Length: 444
Image (cartoon, rainbow, N blue to C red; front, side):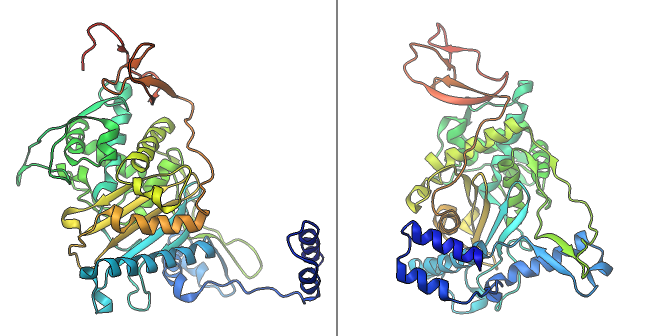
């Protein structure tokens, strides 16, 4: 009561409330609000919590009476995620009547999962539009083709190889000319989303514009086995077939896996353990013994930063640039994803403090007819705007071992005084370009 009255006195003294309101508030009896999740909006999270606890605690210990489970759920974010998904899907059905279905079991579905990258805590998880209709959790139990949200793993594999001289830097160029790859099932010839080829393109543009051919060619250069190895390190546990098309996200993965992989980037290369609980306490107030949680550095901090920088470019200039129209400002990184025949729409992105994955599609695979930027990105933006107020805190800062240098955008060479065009770029120490602009005999 004293603490409450102190706050009221300060509010009155600072002119935040008038005298009648102040006196009325101080006359009110003290009551404690019961903070419990809305069962309709938190049931997917509670079901995920129930599934995960036996993975970390002995089942006999969990059977004891009087246990108190401290969940990672942030009620405000959970309610915001549920509202963003529900209103977002309803809005899609209104704008595109062709995707509306009368049968509740056949309606377009989606999921939203939000993690704190530094700890792996699940802050919000909404596995579908209505738990009462379907208890299937599309965040953790569904496996869907990842599409272009998988592409950053290809670039990470190539950036890691830069120190050995076999990879790429952010000043490199890729070929987006026609590509044919022989496979046991025939020749594979990828096409871009716009059904055009774009010739010689900067690495940044290749990912920002989500060019399939350039990415597939890069994967052939570094090796599909290396791409798989990177995805595994970042936290993808689903089956990853060693085929050329894997580079374009043909593997089925869960949104929760993808959120963990992007959280590893947001966490500077340290892979978090995804969890829905903080601890379990018995009736005596003692913490129940649990299996250890292991956080592991799986990616060099500098490489994680370069990958983050690429994903910032996707937001600023690429397929995610429409975020600017959703009232979000500050440090944002992410990637859109659209699978073949537009069956699955993704957007996975992060701020310095929050990682969010959104998937939209039908349970029974059929064409949604919408891209990730049209279907999933607006839901992501709605949720993140509510979670942050629209102004993102923090920055993506280059770590030790990453250097910044001005380059010539046309050639990727080091830009000296007199070079007609300049752009700052980031490099792992020792991998910056040796050629310079202007320079006699400088090639392409």
